[in-house]
Length: 215
Image: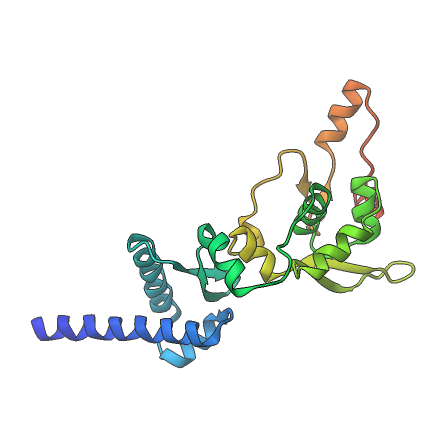
């Protein structure tokens, strides 16, 4: 019985070391299925081991952490140590997002596959500069053209966005206090419109696609 328990501990330790080696060597998010194939273990076993490793990194106060990005895992430096790492390893201009860029990023995060015109309809101002800056930083990317007149390009957030803000997936985003999403995952401005009507305020502009869906 004791021999079996020792063997199990050795196997788990070996699996942890192997996972750490794979993630370190890859230097990118490694998909679950890649790890499962390499280790020849079940998805449940992988999830258990990964969860255990994440706790160990936290308890040992390490400089790295094991993060989940959608259905992938990656070794990353802790965000709290960013100010020490950035000057040494990256000589590019430090990303600096304005309030306008953050607003635009939030709208895109809560509205996968939203067009620039729809962003401008929500914000009420031009979004060109903000979209270009977010593309430059790799926080958003093109998500394909929409079947609307002129075939406008749509945008969505990237894995870099998730890593930057510490989310595993878009499902981890906090609930919006003033907006909710419809069945197409687009913002529906309803409660705020009712509030504005009651207070005699001008209605917040809505994207045409959202308005058509409501009608």
